[in-house]
Length: 275
Length: 305
Image (tube, rainbow over all chains, first blue to last red):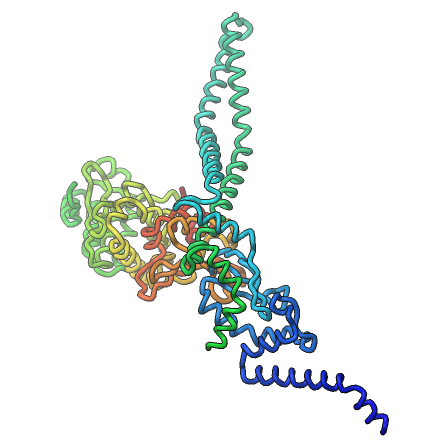
């Protein structure tokens, strides 16, 4: 026996494994050529139990992550557009085989989660789901930030009233100043006790009015801050309301939506096979 | 109130002094002319006459009317030819300047007042709220819409009562007057008034802080409208109102600078931004709250508060 024949005889396992790999790659190539997306997913899951939980591809194709997800993404996007039209998806700028999933197509829509193309899993933002579940329990017209909104509105009302009184205060201050001037002019050097008391009272009033007037810039700043804070709370409430409306347009409640998302992998593959 | 009759007045003038003879010819011409150019020429002469030669006569004669009156009469002539809806020139009892009543707005009256500008000119304003519609400078040939006060005017009770159709007629009337004046080489600026030109309506500020759009989002949401992100690569937002859309987008202007603009998308080309300000309380509320940023850019320099 030659050396070559000896090596072939002694290493049947190696040759079998290489044959299997060639066969696997051939099947994958054929599935891709024929656009059999379901079959591609099945092949990618072969010998790789961890894939369904969003880990990694079989080692033999692990360097094809980008290309495989580019191939698989359009069909999955089509599925989302058809079955979950209230979600907007954009390729993630940080992870190559994932898409950022947003709820709605409105101004500053919030990210609901991240979709992994290869594992067909959508991981949801837990905080957002918790907020939506809290919102759905509220009566119509109520919101999570309702009490904060009421409190800030009260603050704003007070601040505006303070600023609105400025004209009145300015006039009052002028009157006090005029009275003080008159007092000085008429009784210069000849104060009796009553005049002295009057002067002291007027001076105190002037000091108080001037101190109050000095607070105006601070109050104006505070008003702007409060209005911005109010807007932020109202915006959060408005976003949650729209998000909830979108989910409830298709599901009976948020929990049903979450349950459906957890079954995304199986539902999508079934859908592909039926299609 | 009594109708003002130019011809009757001119007949009275004819009986007066020699100086009045010229005056009478001017007034008679004002009542007779058909061509816009002739009308403008005669009203310009009337204004010059009023400034330079009328002082003594004004004191002596109860029937003397100020410049604003003649500007009103001239405007009424233009307004009559500009619309099928009637224009009435009415002289309120005890007043020296006529008011204009447009048939489409039965509860509103308009008058001209002098603009406090060195270059002169007049403002057309609604009498009850004293809200300006426009600036008309016959001598320097300028005709500009006050977009800020007109936006407030369309929300007033009189205009609300008259409805969408009345506003449409009024806007068309102003556009038609502007066309007459444009043919006499007037500078025209009526942003947002023509239903056919509702794209690229430039806002006052080039940059919009995010908080301004947040505010529109919240205000709209309270009335069940949704501010959506612009489709495609454009930076901007959009609100659908039935078959109409209000679009706010950031574009590059001719100088290469970024600029926020409105587009009112209406396939039927019947709606203007002012129609929407009249009909959508949330849009008006937001627009007025941020008017220094999101107001339509107009010839602000002629509108003195």
